[in-house]
Amino acid sequence: MSLTATGYFNYLWRDVVRAYTSPLQSQSRESVTAVDTRADGRIYGGEFFFRHRPYKNLFASVAYSLSRSERHERAEWVIAAVDQTHTLSMLASYVLPFGWHGVWYEIGYEPIYSDQRRTARLPMYHQLDVRFDRTWTYDTWKLTLYLDVMNAYFSPLTVSAHYSFDYSKPTPLQVTFPFLPMLGVQGEF
Image (cartoon, rainbow, N blue to C red):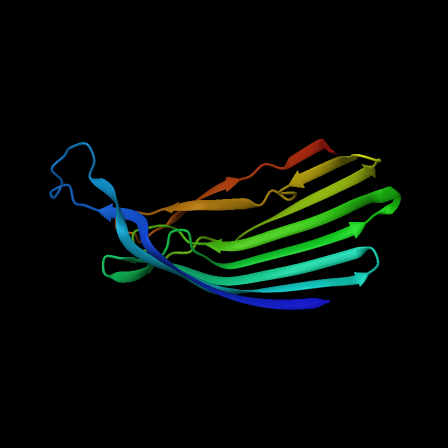
C-alpha cells in the first residue's frame, strides 16, 4: 500500500488568449476578434495518489487532483476556460483464470463553462470503461487479444450551456457518448 502527495505550480508568460475588440474599434469588416499574446497565466494545485494490492490477484488505485488554472485578462485574474478544479480517477485490475485480466476504470471531473464571466460550472462528468485482455508470450513476440468497452453505462456529458440574452436562464446541452465496444488484436515484436 502506498500514498503519495504532489504539489505543483506553473506560471505562463505571454499566453495566447482572445483579444476582446469592439466592432466600433475595428478598422476591418472581416474580423473583430484576434488573439493577444500578452496575457499571463498560472496553474497550481495538488494530487493525491493511493495504490493498494489487497489480494494476490487484485490491484486498485485512486487519484484525486485539486487544481486551478487562471489567466490574467483585462487587468484581473479569471478562471481559464480549460480549468478542471476536481478530477477523480479510480482503477481496479483483477487477474482472471486462464491468463485473462479485467480492468475497470472510472473518471470524473467538474469542467467549467467558458462563458464571458467564467463563473458557471457544468455538471460533473463520469464514465466507466472496462477492458478484458489475454496475452500470449512467445520467444520473440507477444500477441494480445482484448475487448474494450468505453462508457459502459451511457453517461451523458454536458458540453456547454446556452444562456438567454441576459444570462439568467442556462439551458444545458448534453451529448451521450455511445456505448463503444472494441475488439482487437495487438502484436509486439
